[in-house]
Structures are given as C-alpha cells and as structure tokens.
Amino acid sequence: MRNPKKGGRPPPKGGKAKAAKPKAEPVTMETDTPAGQATVWRPGIDPVAEDEELDYDPTAYDCLHRLQLDWPCLSFDIVRDELGAPRATFPHTMYMVAGTQASSAKQNYVAFVKLDALGQGRHGKKAKKGDEDDEDEDDDDMSSSDDESVADDNGGEPPPKMHYRMVNHGCGVNRVRSCPQRPSLVAVWGDNGQVKMLDGD
Image (cartoon, rainbow, N blue to C red; front, side):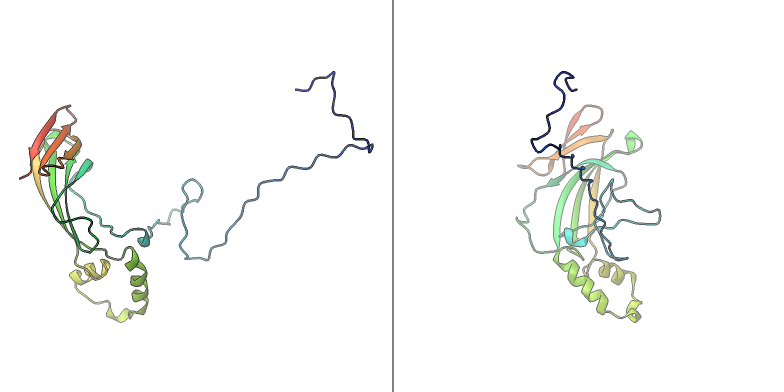
C-alpha cells in the first residue's frame, strides 16, 4: 500500500513519465504430431479419449513379462541363488517368494516361485530389430499354431514358465523377506501382528 504523503516518483527531467511496459503473456507451444505417431503421455496435461488405449515403449525395458498368482501380493522378495551374477545372457532363471492377500484368511499362502526361460522378447535393443522384421514379413504367412504365435510374441523365444509351491498361511501377508545367508529361510509378517519363520527346503 502506498503512503499518501509521499506520492509517486517524480517524472524524469525530460518532462514526461515513461509508460509502463505491458506484461508478456505466457506462450503455449502447440506441437502438431502426425496421426498414428507415438507420443509421450503426460498425466494431468494430456487428455485420454474413451476409445484410446495407452501403450508402453518396448525399448525402455530389457526384459518384461506379466506373471501372476491367484491372489494379489503386497510383498515379495528375490531369493538369492547360485546361478551367478551379474547375468547378461538371456534366457534368465530366478527365484522369489511372495505372500498373498486373499478375500478370506484361510485362502492366504506364501508362494515359493521359480521363474524359468525369461527371455528378452521384443524388448530393449531387440525391439527395434523386431519392428523392422515385422514390416518385411508377408501377411500370407499368418496361419500357425498357438505355440508358434506365443513364441512370435516373445520375439521367437519360448514362453516363460512359472513354477510355485504354496505354504498355507492363516492370515494375510503384510511383508515377506528371504534371509541372504540362508535363502530358503523366509520371515513372514502377517496382518495379525505375528512374524513366522518358514523353511522353503
């Protein structure tokens, strides 16, 4: 708030006061992208139409597979193995343990999981090569068996396999951790506040 006694600044000696410059309005840049070209979706900025589906960029992942158990799991842990590290050659094999959150307490279990034949598929550096190969293929060669179509989805590799063994647990599992010194020994913290030790051997 101005002090009424002081008033404004006196005009310069030239006689006229300079007019205030108008404030510049923020400029929004509109980028015209051709129809069908992939763009990055920005949440809260870019709208999504009802018939529009979001897809991921396969070059962002070296290995990506979708595997699931019967019930959702709030916690899982990677089980240490003796297959060597670091592993760079596909396919991979890994072990993990997970605890479920079922609809009823009696249906919960701790799963000791083995994931086998985890190939790179059409991800990472192979994604760009796979896209070029798809353009060269003829549409007449579409008839194939289900196994071949699954292998094609994985970049010509066999599909991954998941083997698991269930150990019944009387309540939901909030957290599960594997012991690094003895990987088969697992600590399970249930939603009843109790911690149990399980031996996977």
